[in-house]
Length: 67
Image (cartoon, rainbow, N blue to C red; front, side):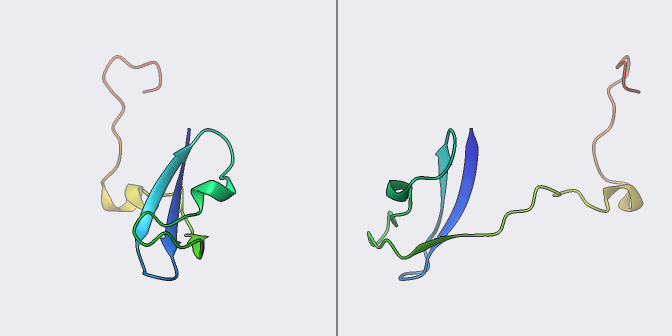
């Protein structure tokens, strides 16, 4: 299932739509004001970039075949 971050250009409401597959026209309606003047926000999948240098991030569980 995909998560789409959207923002309404009419009222400024930010909201998410969860959909299996691609976003459809009926998903592009603001739940706050009903406007169809909605655009998709840029989303990044690299949330932990630079985590190695800061010491943060995911640890490999002990006994894992990946450690």
